[in-house]
Image (spheres, helix red, strand yellow):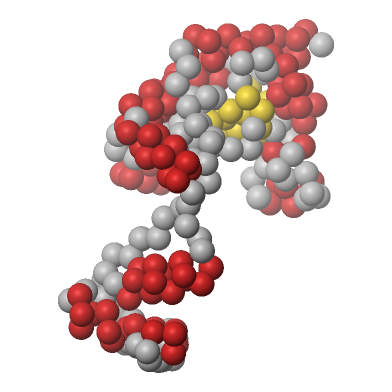
Length: 230
């Protein structure tokens, strides 16, 4: 909910999903909290009580609500709940625009002379492309990465030169966000460790927003132009 559902970088939240398909009593030694008496609820054995009372094995969701919520208080504030619900109302519209912009931006980068690699599912090949087509049937999403020929220096300069696009580690915002992981999120790692995680010196990640694509590209062009001339 923090990312695409909220969509505006205003709230942090998560959800617990219990499909009701798991048998919590099949291996009681592995789920002791579901299979031993809970003294705070008159000795209730959640793995047995919930299916008997409700006809569905949703003991995890019920216990999370009546025990963990009571004991730990992990309840979202009314303001954050409102912001996330409001974001949910426009999720389909935003997501369609974001991934359409991402595809156009990937196409733009694919022919740019400072970019030697575009990391976006539509540019995958082989088994990776087959999986992308299988699971991403409505589009390839708003996240893309590029690798710059100029390496870490170029990556840092690109971020510093951006004016409209935000330098933020978040994703899923209605605004376009960019980050250079080698100098920020992964800077605590050695160069070897960075490469092992897929972070190359010139790698820049974009979470593409809903701005007009011409404005997104214009900001990137003005950011890359002085790097090319340097």
